[in-house]
Image 1 (tube, rainbow, N blue to C red):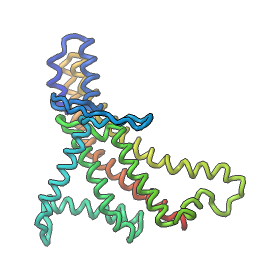
Image 2 (cartoon, one colour):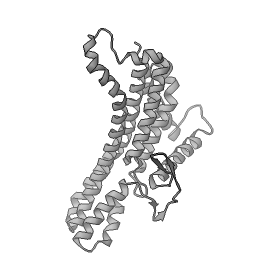
Image 3 (cartoon, rainbow, N blue to C red):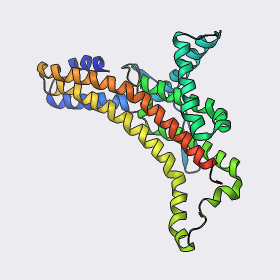
Image 4 (cartoon, one colour):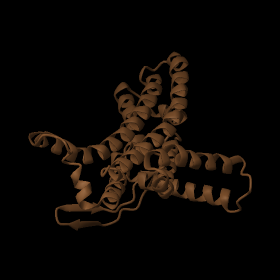
Length: 279
């Protein structure tokens, strides 16, 4: 990331162009575009569904999703194609993460039965977000988790699974009963019921915005700090900017794992709360 910005500095000629270039560097990494590695991606026809227009064109973030999926499939296949009695190396690391998701996230929040059942789902979500977060730190890739459309889609998946298990475990009557808590004076339902209803949609919104905001903020700060070298046109600034940017890159590695963990544990918590409404 840092090297890619410094290489771009050779093309600047005046203050106005430098400011635009710094802005373009940041937006190029964060925004979804129809180009990647200098090549224009295929443009596909749009589909009109009443007032809704769906564009199936391939963008840079779509390519990131494909690459991230391919990395996960290849990594797990290569590591576990011939299972060993005692795993080592990468197999041991991946197995440790899977066991962490199962024992520290799924079972404590969902109970043993449902936790074991949903461990594959939670692991898939965890590894997918983690790989995309890490890819966003590599200059050749773009930040898919810095795209609110992606985080909204992931939150939508979490929302659908949450509602499904809420209805499955409690039935229609039991699920909607939590909108009207027992032992509460009837007039308070005018306040509590709307709050409970809105809470169903606030939870996935929080998931969406938390992941999006954290990833965008980290990348933006790093780019802005390194960009000071070019904007201020002083090599002396680099003695402070580059070490600080490197430190923030290391922090972003931690944030990549942390945000994947938070997204998955909140998903497990929301599913557990929906499935336990009857109690």
